[in-house]
Amino acid sequence: MKISPTRWVKSSHSSPDGGNCLEWSPTSGIATGTVPVRDSKNPHGPTLTFPSTAFADFIAGVKSGAFSDGAWSR
Image (cartoon, rainbow, N blue to C red):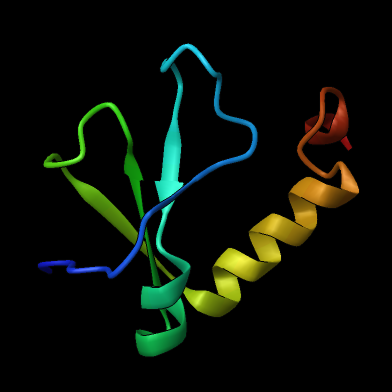
């Protein structure tokens, strides 16, 4: 699928030195119901897409600590 988002946003957890950076396009998510995600170091590389509802559930899980160390063993 070719993604043409109007705006990419870098994750607030990305490192300031340019490593381990993740970007997503909220405007595409709103417009299409599918959220594209990419590696900001390779903006012309592959893009993963997720249904907006699944992405929202993932963000809620991150904020609640569901993916923190030790949470996987529950």
